[in-house]
Image: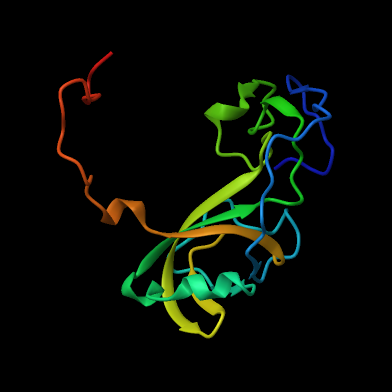
Amino acid sequence: MVRLNEVRSGEVAIDLPERTDAELYFIGRIHTPWTDRLTCPRQGRADGPTCRIEMFAPWDKGLDSITEFERLEVLYWLHESRRDLALQSPRSDGQARGVFSLRTPVRPNPIGTSIVQLLKVEGPMLFVRGLDCLDGTPLIDLKPDRSRFAPLAPAQAGDFQVGDP
């Protein structure tokens, strides 16, 4: 695991640009049992601890009908992650790999995703299992699990087909 500001053998840090390209609204806060990166799991587990997602007003109005879904996709901002490594050596073996070929939290835009099981909703609070982020992590978005939906439009000529180059 990458320690705070550590650059391992083979890794490459880059200078970050000065300008920002987007603005995000943090719509809530995630509450988990993990308070530091070294004890936080690398992948969420369906049998993991119950965690809470606190929705902020006025975004909590968007929870209407959320209980129709058993599984949700949670998008969150990995607020303690570095953003300046383009090549990383996740196994500490000196073999660097590009950030976009890894599921590392150290990325230019440290957005994390988890598919969670929705246990219950109490007002603006969702109780879920399957998260893998630190206590206090800012919430970016919630969506029903995308694997539950079929494409809305029928396939058309020119659509990308599996196996196409």
